[in-house]
Length: 454
Image (cartoon, rainbow, N blue to C red):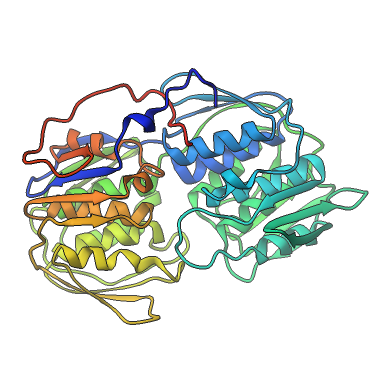
């Protein structure tokens, strides 16, 4: 990353202090979607000319992807608050460095663009948060169907197209997979002939990636349904494009308002992306109203809990399961949450128990029983991953006393200055190196740069 970009993380601590018992109220804007921005940045490698992206969140995961793209030869510059320009014209290698890939699961999105551009890709197996098994078999299935030879060696996935290059194919996934859908789409847009992807992921972030590729000149149809049709083109061109709003950040802010029995409006979002969450909040007694690009929750009278089953879109998103569970700890009655996407997602439950939450999970079970209505109390806790960190923040906002959340570096991977957004809504939240006798006013400093990861 260019030296002119400030090393923001060097100026920040990795602990968050939250003083609970304050109702959140007011209006706040969400930022661009992490899970859309990352594959779109990777897709820019397929362009022949520069790509300008707006509403790119200033989070560390974006910084890792930034450094990955630079490592393969792309030139990137910041154009202001949340705009970047990627020039891929000098990209010269098909091999991604392990030191960066190990930090980010989404780095595996590079396989498709590198394979499409060079006919060869060598990318380490994905890293990032430890949420359970991250299989690559469906990615490999797609690459092989498109005519590539695929192998694993020394921790790398190696895909190599045959002499005639990638060729369109009919590919059906055994189950919807966001990662495999993205990589198959990225590899197929410049393959020879037609490709049909069946039983694909329908998440809004996948749709946004497809729409970005179309804006660059790709021929893609059916995104948002379970079947995507692709007609390969010879090359793609640069474009100016705005990333969709982050539905997970939006949901976290709404759940923060609900947990504190507040009145919160999130603007510049897409309500249709959060229908599953809004339905469940309504079942708990939350008053939910929506407009074209805003959602308001009024949680002055929570009547009970609800049961949640995570599922691919349009089902309840797995990334909102942790903060939803924290909210349900404050709701009267018993709730059941079943996690169907990741097999190690409840690692944060023990941390909630330190705050007085009554949550029980059986050994080797992906189901949590939540007995709500108990009063949470502030305690020192540690975030094991991005969304678990958000869950602890939600719990801290609802708890009595002060909560110290360690592992803030995880939260920074997916949320752009979460403490500032919550403070703007009346929350008492502050970065700190430890628990101080009193919560001092939140200081201000520039956050216009993208954090640098070292």
